[in-house]
Length: 214
Image (cartoon, rainbow, N blue to C red; front, side, top):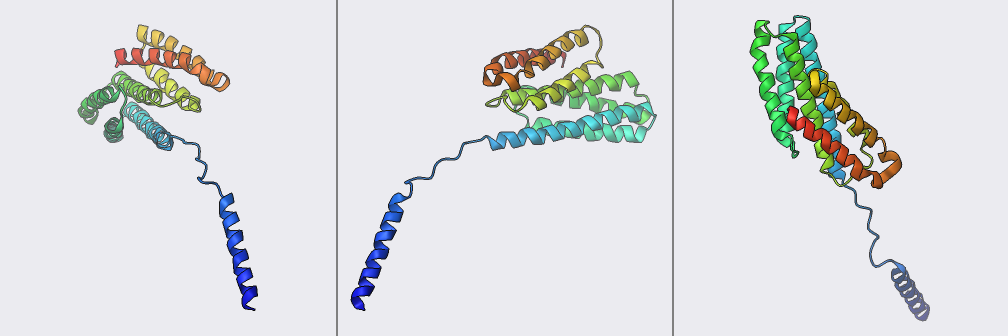
């Protein structure tokens, strides 16, 4: 009995030794992904969309003569833009803060019912441009633009929409640059990484234009 028990124990030890020897020395590394960057882009996109809604609400409320709603929308949108600026690491941080100042100047006018439709439309348009440019600039600062075509397209649309409130040569020049950038962004899905240099160059031209306008 004692001999049988010793043989059994020895067999277990042999099996354990072989089993551990077959295990890999190190677990394979999982592919690294910039989760923090992706999460921030998604969060910033939601914040931008919400701010745009507030800006549109300010314009529509002013058009309908609702002073209280206009003032509230202006205050909420300026607070939202200021919050975006506080976390921004792009070249448009100061541009965002400049729009905060511009919108805040409109609040006394809105309270008195003296805020003109054209004035608030132009201010809202510039604020939208700053928000869109800030998003695009942040995306350009990342490792890659692959998988971000939808966000880029959305923010280019925001820039283009903001231009409509400016009119004149600026709207024409900016519109042409943005249209070119939209076409370029469309090549990301088919061209992949090889298309990125041209896309970045096109987006860079749009941002340089936006800096001049803002």
